[in-house]
Image (cartoon, rainbow, N blue to C red; front, side):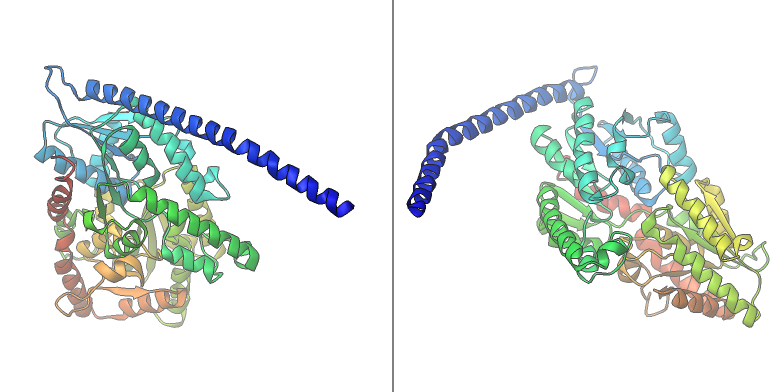
Length: 492
């Protein structure tokens, strides 16, 4: 009896759900139609807004080219790409209107341009309109202690919406890696969209770190120790990589900065027909002006590191390896040594990292031998490079490494991480001659630094000369040619 009653209840439940199917389908269909109408209405509204922006005072239509670069006032390699790209476009298309979406609300547009000149020696020949965004905090990693990739990507959509509401361009370039803004500008804004990818938001290397339960800056120790949490995070990464591939494939033109980045973007975005390597511009000529044979004014040896104070740059490895080198100096007589870390601080998090690095130097007892130079002018950067013997780089899988190229052009002997762009594109033999060194662990770095310092002046000069001869392919001129060639399809 109970079984019969249970069967009857189940049948009634099934009938009830069946009765809801058609009404539910109707409601879903209606909601989809309403959503489509709303989105279409927004698109039409944005198109009218675009026409008003594109029309000049004399009534002629002007192409509006916009770059999405929320941290355009920072002093990193990505910002150098932005200003060189704008300079190249202004030379070839002087009649176009150029816009930069930025979140640097604490400075004026003129101050941003002056900063670009001081840091990178780049001066634009035509005006640039800055659209200041108030919601940049939505892409700050500090806002998302967990699910950081997802949080920042969703935050970038809202930031992109703010940008789109203020200015609707004809051509939209994401020059900072916020791929989730691409569908917004392409399908709602009706823009032709392009990307310059410095570093994929997620990569197969990041997946392998989680899969192998290794500790890394993107994989906390408590997760790597727990198989269940590692599996959950791996699923999250795979789902994120799938969506990242979808939004990235919206790009009409894709430019990547190195062979390493190219391999990852091809595997994720699958848009090989419109993807090209465009090496980032390095002010090679300015550094080539430094005479190789000029006697250094500082006694001993200077070791210099160039790079923003971000966690992935792994500055602690430089300080720890330098401490090991100083310990070797006690056992083996070496000249006086000093490590100078040069970089840009974008926000309070970066400043906190610098303070942590200072404390690490103190803990290791080498604070007198380590200096920090933050947001310094270009001339001061050039001076330090002219005085240094070794250039240090320690980022695992650095997408390219403009700082590495600058060190080589300035005549320092580069010691870079054995991965990513430095390994595949930069610190490679030139005419079968050595151009620098690669390392991975603290011990590797310390031993290689000691080896370089023990070399004769003649041997070091030979390596420096080889390195200089190899970096011409990363000049501003080469970048302009490759960048403009890729941009032609967007500006037809």
